[in-house]
Length: 159
Image (cartoon, rainbow, N blue to C red; front, side, top):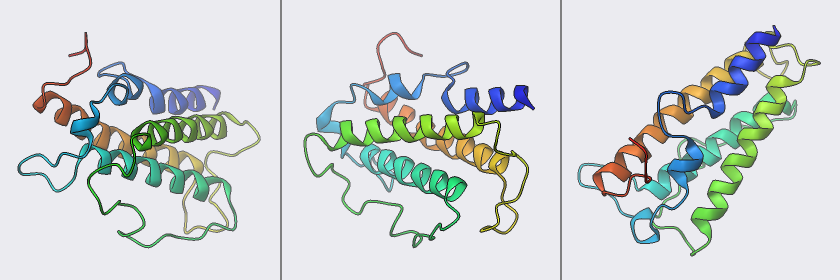
């Protein structure tokens, strides 16, 4: 079970096959954060905020027996494509990374059974929530990576 905990925790943060979230999200030019690319519905900022909000929601569900569901989709996506302030991107990145580490700590907590269904859910387990978060984050981080490539702003030294 320790190996599974290590694998799940590592998978939330790894960059074995791609750029890390840290490298991808740091240094995104402010003038491009709110740009909606042709053929896309959202900006990089909206994707980042959605990542942050969804991750916080999954974390809350995973550790809070009094969890209250949010309204889909309004509570999960910011309406405005542009960050509301010059610090909003940085704050969102910080919160995303903080909550990701909180999920890692939750997964690594040996007092938590990875496969015991949550009493407040309908069959969800911590292992399932971890895999859900890994999948969700990879999907949207991949979108942001593509945006950076299209905008010729991919992190230096990354492919």
